[in-house]
Image 1: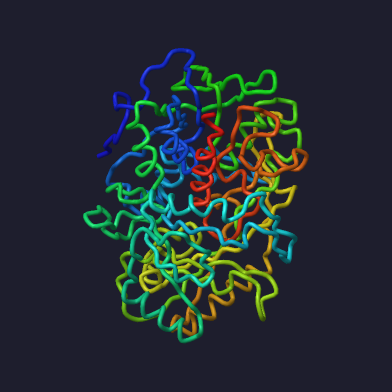
Image 2: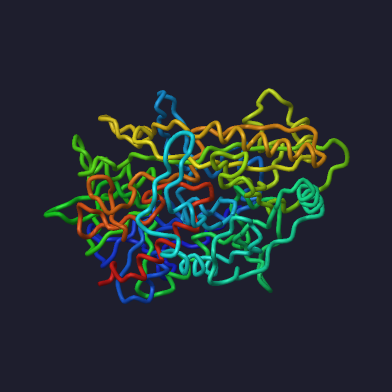
Length: 514
């Protein structure tokens, strides 16, 4: 049975609305960017309205059902897009309070210091950002505390830190610890992934099998809903309006004048002094492009809006060891960054490897539809499962576009396939040497949008960027973008913590409340 966690009548959640809703700061999106903005603004004295297309995710038994989550796609609620080849696909993001973090794997690493500078790759340059790691460093620590990050700092590429991880690392289960020992014997330096879970003393996390790609029934995942949005709406200055799809950004005289939206089938207008878009790299760009039918798009004098889309080049790597079922429960604790940077025998950076939440036969059935589920279950019970990711460099032709009929199209050609193939090869070789002789791989396609970034990048030159280093639009005095759209490069680490830290940085600057 489903249970509504929150809804109209809950303090801070907007019920019925007038035709026009007014506030000081309107925030579009309640994912990692929008929720963190609201949390950071909660004591600044401004009246803040967060507008979320979806609703609170239901709490129900199906939250932890592989069949419901993967077999039935119960929680996929994104609208279809069309790829450059004309094929329809459903992107891997979600419309809930908390956005995609409701179903993410809760891995929250920092970008490396070098990721903010220029890096040469086989397929081109990863450009420098107009801000440095030092600009974000204190806010990384604040975000790690807010989102309950557990870690050990043993990653050999771990950047400089002014604060320790707020919580001790999540221990490896015995089979993962044994694998770590065997990897160390090969000269590889595995570390504990920085995981956002409520494993504090008295915390609610039980380290279950159903975390990565699942909604947590216990609210024990460090997601944007639980850790940021709910605390934010405890403030009398922050309100949340769910089930509201913003479809137009209206402008007048070099500024945003209002937002046009559909709420439960009824048209409304939102008027504010300042506006923040945090709908994700695909949807933020699509909203601004669709707001200027027949034109270049709102805030797009540079013609860079929607361009430079990045998503990481990713492959699942599963090593199988026939024999006894090791009975994994919480599998997602190990990372490998030994090949993250260029070095002897590695002319280009290869990327990062992370253990996945435990795969099951039902999880991978869509990728192997011809295989009986019982056989897939046998293999996955005996596998160790990893996620290999390589930086995707920005290309102008990799872009979000809106067709004349309103169709949302994503043109994406993954980059750095050569370095990525080498990363997968090294991971596979290491697993075989560690006692997992059967290795299976599956490269992810255009549907894998959970690490999307880059469609409204920041910069100092208005002719080559969409927002300035403070993330305010060059073309509009009262519009900020505070999601992964503003990334200049993608690095090879999960983007969510950087989104949160950057949102904190901008709020801390006082620009939104000045």
